[in-house]
Length: 106
Length: 124
Image (cartoon, rainbow over all chains, first blue to last red; front, side):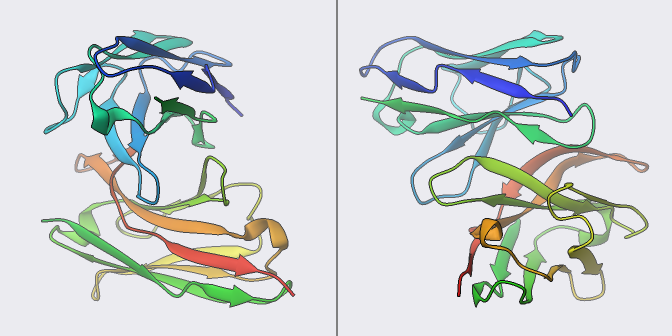
């Protein structure tokens, strides 16, 4: 199984900050990585697929990069709505696996 | 608009059974793989199972293999998860999700959108 490890687990930041979340895969997954945002009490929502493809309707302050085993999600200027938990997910091979999540808090 | 609406969650005893349903609308259901993903209280996301659009391929996490069965009724645009031999550790919100992108031959295994989830509690 491919293990996905996110860092940090918790990130404290302020509105307007630039933040970066890292996701590492235990083996190469090429660019088969998605990022999701989950607000409290809500279902996850996809932000980025194929490591760097921003999904329709997602603000341009979100960006993704990386390939192989190391990936990043960057939010260029935090907005109040962005305080949530973020998950990476690999879809290179079964079983499909998620990172443990990064909670972004004020 | 794509909509996914789960139902069937509730309280079950250890060793018991539940059947979850996910009613889909707003897209050609039979053309898309569908997924179940769960989230234990206060924990992260765990892929559970998925099924191809034609139902000829199914996959399961090791944690549920042999106990859970995924199926679909394309005439009724509905996805199912039959959960047997339930354990305490199956307690979670269960989300159904749609494959975000499919060609004529395969789907990429990332999810968009997700349903609102249904809570399954396994407890005596």
